[in-house]
Length: 421
Image 1 (cartoon, helix red, strand yellow):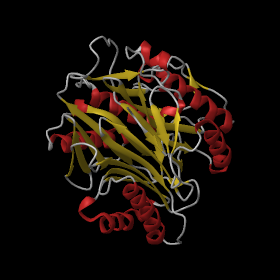
Image 2: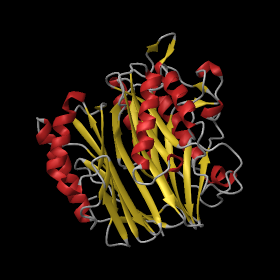
Image 3: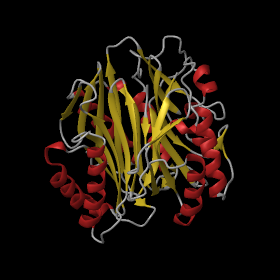
Image 4: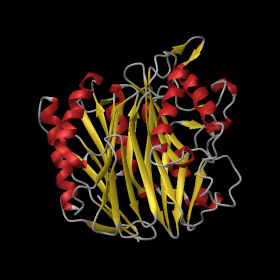
């Protein structure tokens, strides 16, 4: 039975839907959720510094708080993947050394994202831990870019900080090169690119011009061309599913001008685990967008759902205030936030999961374990945060300043949800 935990105060058990769930939330600079699936404990945490002026001081404050949570949940040494949001890309090398010194041999796969934390701190950290001692969990730390976790006949491959290695300057060529780099790094561990189920694509000046077109449109052209020979999730996709299969994804702005990627791949030989890419009944599938939005449409699913018997994990792509294929509530950040959350609610609902062949595995917004909220205009942070907290409650959340893939979009939200029959 999945269990959520989200406070340094004693956990309060509240039946939210189906199974009994536990939420824990600490107000002391960190929010976290704990999900127990098949005797394996997953910890999702979002940490911001409470004290300190320098990067070193703020980083250690956030890391010590993360460490305390991991120890409290009896999952020491379990952090396998983290995203570090930095207010200045020039801090990356210094921050990387801080992480190496702190974690030592237990360094997670880490992506250094050049996006300003909304609260004005120098950094914020989103971390995933997979608990030892609650089942047979093997953690293989290949490098500071790649960590593999294995349990119950399942392998999760976390690949971070993928950057192009080319002198080319165009978004198209640099994106193609970065995808190729991702494929090569996975192949070194015997992982096929078709096993990728979730990507993050961070693009500097995302809505800026690129020749006679737009930089995000050129990223989508590269993604389409690179993805063409692959059949994603072909070994685990639900047999009755007849649609197109693409990984869940977030394509979001970042500081600077380059492209940065990370991904999660999934491997299993178990016959009881199935994948279904979810589309939203309120939205046109991104890969079916007209040429108005680019010569080649964005190739991603609105979410990727993985089911194992009575349980489901739902990886939710970056979602915005779009219905059909049109932007709604132009200029109104609060209304866009609510429209975005309405879209996520519809996407992970029981009605939508049943429509996709996974009856009984939908969830309301209470099924979310972690979210990221990207905000275009810093002045919108207070109203966007209030709207999210009103709808989501005390949920581990990263708020970062980032441009969204259309000039008129002010907010984008992604996350991960869990459900059970």
